[in-house]
Length: 84
Image 1 (cartoon, rainbow, N blue to C red):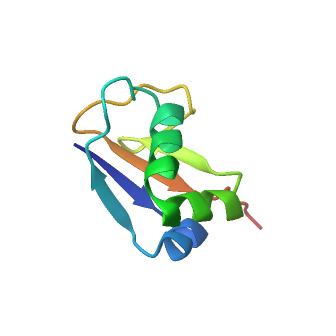
Image 2: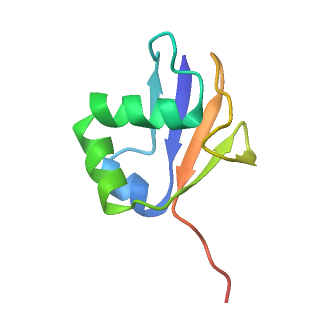
């Protein structure tokens, strides 16, 4: 199982702060995970469409969409942040 955590606008648009999922075989990168999740969950698809730019962390480490994911990981998705 993989835990997906949503933050800020993504959390509001999904309607939940996290989902625990078991993706099918072959879903082994963040990009594949997000694509599968959007196909499988209409609220996630809508949130990603409304927030097309987002950042990702895998196990609390800022990562890229090409990062590997596996059973037991925690993947966080959040909109870009700025300082000021």
